[in-house]
Image (cartoon, rainbow over all chains, first blue to last red):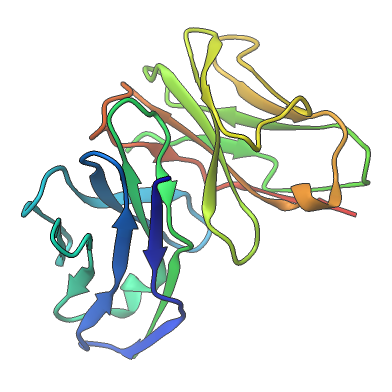
Length: 112
Length: 115
């Protein structure tokens, strides 16, 4: 079946450090890929998405590239801020199914 | 930006009791969902709801669970006889369409603790 695997957290970084959160997937067909973010006390919010191979999703300085050959969708940011501290969820959705398939989430902690 | 609202934020119940988790989706959305996350595990899909009926459900969503849109604004998840393993964060979500690329809007969740 379809599944998403994310790196274990927490990821602890200093402000302005480079961020990578790894995400790989298993899916039948051609899924759409998403990163959702959950800030403390809030619901999950869509951060970015990519709908086909080699697409790059980007938002708020974050980006992720849909790599079909490695079945990956790693999240990156060149310079993190304290306000980026949150839980990041990688997810996929395939044609014909309404459900999102999520990973476990990765907590990011950024210190000043 | 419009929000999905969930109440209560925390619910504590005794094993075997019925609970109802409540959600107010975004007003012009047509598709509604429940997800849950047991501590340390993945966020899992439970059910999707459209046009007053269940359109998709997971193996988790057995006869103990039911959903309802009682009044055109609320969307509820009922667990008839709670078990210890139902303890989890429950997220409600809504969307305008069910397209593969569609953005879901999530509430901040209800933390259910079954004792």
